[in-house]
Amino acid sequence: MSKQKALEHKSTKVERLESLERLSAGIAHEINNPLGLILGYTQLLLNEAEPGDRFHEDLKTVEKHALNCKNIVEDLLSFSRSTEIAKIPVNLNDLVNEVLSVVQPRFDAKRILISKKLFPEPIHLKVDPEKVKQAFMNILINAEQVMDRDGMIRINTKLDDSPSRAVVSFKDTGPGIEPEIIHKIFDPFFTTRPTGKGNGLGLAVSYGVIRDHDGEIRVRSTPGTGSQFTVLLPLDGSNGRKK
Figure 1 (cartoon, rainbow, N blue to C red):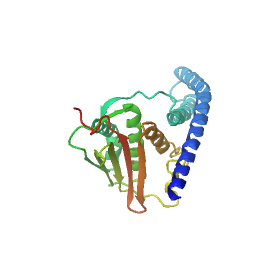
Figure 2 (figure 1 turned 90 degrees about the vertical axis):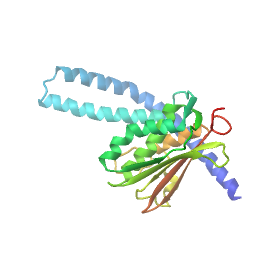
Figure 3 (figure 1 turned 120 degrees about the vertical axis):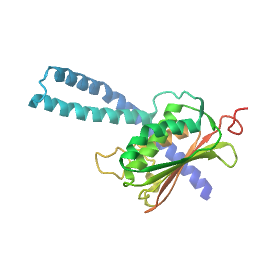
Figure 4 (figure 1 turned 135 degrees about the vertical axis):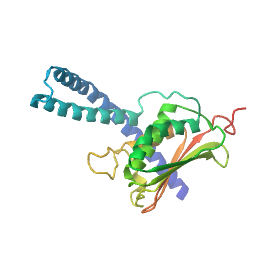
């Protein structure tokens, strides 16, 4: 009975996410065109305004907030995954290294140490590399945002015990997640951060991307100790190695 309830809960969650994805895509597309016009006219007026005067500063304020809205629209489109998935053969370790090269400065600024232990051989996947990198990046940025200075995040890659799947884990030394909300963290628009500090779409996007690749994303957390996010993805081949 417990297993059946878990399956029903997962099915309901997937159906709810799919409905929200369709709604998000529709809203994002409707907002995108007028937002583009606002930004376009603002930038035209900025070209004619004198830098330093009140009118120029007001236009810069309009531009700043319009760009913030543009970022939210892009997040909505990412959540709805309105673009096609283009799967190609890749090495999981290469994807992890590429993501780390992008986020490293953010972690360095807070003196957060990144410790990585990658599987000694290539782990071959067939995925959309840009989408999977975005999923990993969202997990890492979420960890960086909740961690204090001088924290640490450990990143490991390996083969599953089967071995039929690749595993990448992200373990941080953040504040952890309270048991009463841990089941909500992949829900779209759910966030514990103050208004304006996050839109609650990052982990929802990661969940959707991994799901679309027939993978799985898990989380374990202890309040006051930290959290571990584990991503499992199907291998491209029987054992993760090219013949």
